[in-house]
Image 1 (cartoon, rainbow, N blue to C red):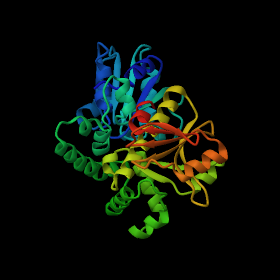
Image 2 (cartoon, rainbow, N blue to C red; image 1 turned 90 degrees about the vertical axis):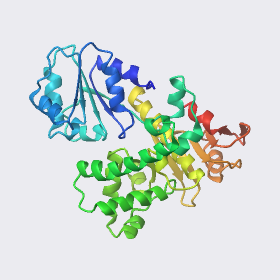
Image 3 (cartoon, rainbow, N blue to C red; image 1 turned 45 degrees about the vertical axis):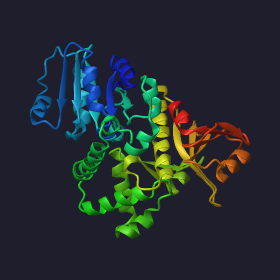
Image 4 (tube, helix red, strand yellow; image 1 turned 180 degrees about the vertical axis):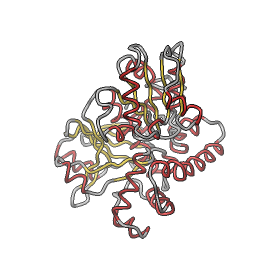
Length: 371
């Protein structure tokens, strides 16, 4: 299936080096190779391959190669300096595409070796909006059952989708986490991972998880940061004009793979809406250079709204997610009435869309397809 970002990546390759990051098995390598077919001579090199690694280290590809694709090169010591050297000494018309299953933009902040030399593209799992954009019909029930990763979403056999997930989780925790950082207690991070699966949609207390796992709150925070860096989870923090204050408040944790969520249909639907909104935010940042963020709202009196789209530090829209509840959320009504924020209630099972008390009530699939 064609990915919506392909044309944008091709356009950016003519300007700078492109870093393509995203979750493991979100389709980065497949997309990179498809892009490679657009050129007469492409060299694909994966740092995990011993043979390719030698070519990378010796820079022994043909000088006439139009496109160089480096996959998983962030595992190479001093990879930023290496890429800087390759980019600065390449032929003028030679193009470079770098892919990796970790947050390459996080690595690049450590030192400014690549500053001004790349455009960042983040490839997320499928969403209804992306499928609609490429002419495919999205199936919301399929998304909630299987998640948006290409292999489980597209496969014909639902059992194969479940088998994929078991192998995916094992690979994430036993391979990716250990390669990313030395973890002395793999069992502890597995426990944190499993506890997070059960607490999607609720503010997460580091102290509470630390007590349950018998580790320190700082260790919990470190483990969650690793899961974030590997595109396993993402945090949504409470909105606050004071950024430092908002970071001290309890975040909510969501999974890029909705199939990992343990909970009822409402929790799974909220997680999926969260992934689609987050993908929408990343797209606005990467392609429109907008100062955009995804937050949630909560008062000391526990009035809460699931999500807030924020641009330039100001709330653009507040969003409450319900599976089949047609009554307006109390928190949504409170914030709409007090601050006049544009408000939407997204409902998975809704017979008729309408506006109630100035709040849009929309069908889940319609809302997600338009992001």
